[in-house]
Length: 408
Image (cartoon, rainbow, N blue to C red; front, side, top):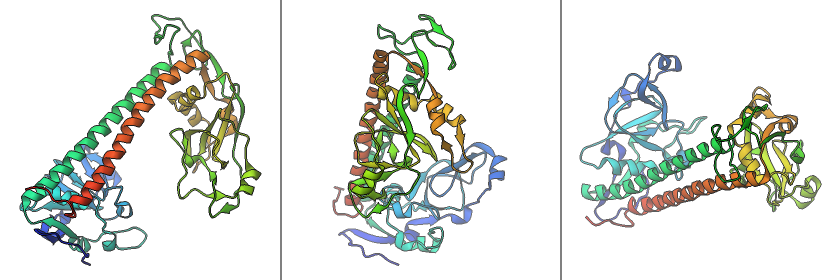
C-alpha cells in the first residue's frame, strides 16, 4: 500500500513501523462504570481527545496517539488525525500509541502524521478503521539528518505556540465578554456612563429579580410587531440559484450561513414563501439547537420551521436585543419552556411571552456598543487564528515535502 512520493536529495521514505514502537498491546479500555469508580486527575484518552479523568495511569512519557477508529480521517486537512500527549496517561483501544525511536526527532514524526492523508490505508464499514497492520505500513517522508528534522519541527512548533497563544487570547476575550454581559444586563449604565451598583443606585423588585429603578420588564411580544416561524412544509428545491431554504442550523454568530449543503429554491418558490421581513428582524433557531441568532440583511431566503423571526419595534435596539437573547437569563427561560423528548422545540408562544429587561433606548444603545466592541476584539483574534492555521498548513506542506529546505 506504498504511496507514490517524490523524494528530495538527502531524504528517504520510512514506514511508521521503522520510525516508532507501537504500544497498542499496553492499551486497556475502561467502561463508564469502571471509570466512575476511578475518578481522578489523570487524563483517559480516546481516538481524538481526552474522554475522562481517572486516578491511575498506564504511561508516563511523551507519546503520539493516532486514531484507530472514529478518527478525522476524511477531514485530515482541517482536523488532526493524531495528537501528542505527555506525562501520566491512560489510553483506550480507540487510539494507536506511537513512541518514536530515539534516532528520529519526536516532533517531526508527529507533524508528519498530524494532518496526513491516510485514507488509502483505512478499512471501510460502518466505522472507518485504521488497523495496526496498515498503520505499520504508512509511509513517512523524512530527512536523513536528524538536525534537519529538528529544524523543521522547531519551525512548526513555533507556529503551534502562536496558535495556542491566540486561542488563549480568544478565551480571555470571551471571558471578558461574559463578565461584561453579566454586569451590563444586570446593572446597566447610568446617565454618567458608570455601571450601577446597589451601593450607589436605587433598585426595585421585579419578576426577574432586583433591577435598576429606571428599567422596566416587558415581554418579547410587546417590543415586536410580529414573532413567527418559517414554513412547515418542504419547498421544491432547485439545483442552483441565488435563493436559499434555511433553517435554524444556518444561523450562527449573528449571520445567515450559506454552505454548499444549503438547499436552493427557484425564484417562483422563493416568491411563494417569501416573508415581509425588515432589517429590524432577528432570526432565532428554535428546533434542536436553541438560541442561535442572525440579523436579517435582506438575504433572499425562505425560512424553515426551525427558524423563528422577531420583527422589532422602533423602541428596542436590535443589537441590544441580540445580546439579551444570548444571555444566560433568556436562554434559561427558553430552556424551561422547551417541548419534545428527542428533539427539543421552542414554541412561538413561549418566545412571545419571554420576559426581558427594558432600559431606555440611550442605555440600550450604550450597552450594545460596549458589547459589540468586545465582539469585534474576539472576531479580530479569530481572524488572526484562521490566518495562523492557514499559514501553518502551507508551511507544513512546503517543509514536510522537502519543497522548501531548511538550512542545517
